[in-house]
Amino acid sequence: MVRFLVLALLSLAGVTQTSASPTQASEPPNPTEEQPPLGTGSLSFPWSHLRLPGYIVPLHYHLLLHPNLTMLSYSGTVRIELQVQNNTNWVVLHSKGLRITTATMLDQNLAHLSDKVLPVLHNPTHEQTAIFSPRVLSGGQKYFLFLEFGAELGEGFYGFYRSTYRTSSGETRNLASTHFEPTSARMAFPCFDEPSFKANYSVSIRRSRAHIALSNMPVVS
Image (cartoon, rainbow, N blue to C red):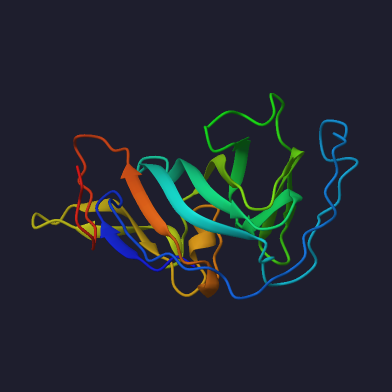
């Protein structure tokens, strides 16, 4: 679950959360050493429950966001440090309305587990995304999931959304802001968006010199 709110002319910076382990203990799909054909034709979504499985725990997010206030869109990357509790080929997490363009799995030494594009499956009904690793993720080990993604800035007041403000001279300008509670972080970036999956965050913002970024947490650099 992600619990920070930022109001900014462009975006956000530096956020820290408390890490905690989930209480549920769900069984992962049976792991396999066989690599399926490229694409998703031979794969089906591995999880049927509304709540995420508890066999993978997020420990830390390294999040980069790059808003474009002219196009009213943004791109981003997130590297999630994961603690795997049971052998599995799948990572299931939340995303809603995001275009995930690249998925990469890394081991503890940041070495790639596969030189091929990892299949990414979506379950829009449950707002979940699943990433398949051809190599089994071993229980008791840590891994890193790296995702590249993009989306339009939202029109409502949830996730990463666009709005406007008026200057002292009366000029109307665009801004981008965030609102993640209770379950809207998944609209901004792929994440484990449930109360039992609190984690630490490092957030970076890429912006023009003409813009500023404001946060409700201290800026590190």
